[in-house]
Length: 132
Image 1 (tube, rainbow, N blue to C red):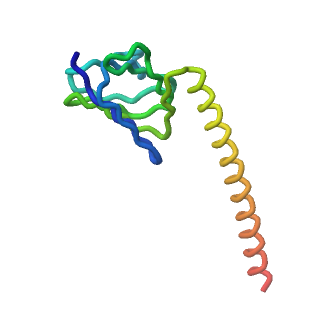
Image 2: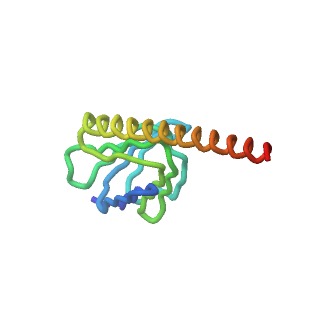
Image 3: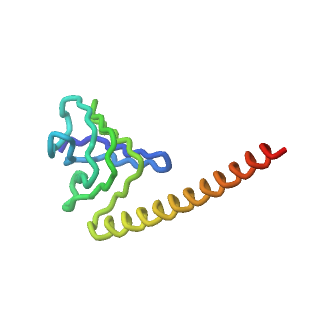
């Protein structure tokens, strides 16, 4: 069976699978599938789940991502995305996604708090400068 390589990259993580038999993803036009020797293509992935199967594997692996870019050429499928989770069990992928969302929500709240403090300090400094 002919296979292709799958490279998934975010700003903080890179993963590679060298013997992928098929890939199923979604873009604005709907769901699509890729197998080895497919014509070159590029698209913008829709947020959600994609899946792929390695050669000889009985089960799919799931790829959860908030969208991204996909390029397939010369039997290399490259996906660039903000973040991603890969797993064989859908429940585990969902749990990892929930944990990542909670972390991002906490980080966003911390950032908002820090920006509020910075804005307050800047306003106070400007007020002090005007009174001189």
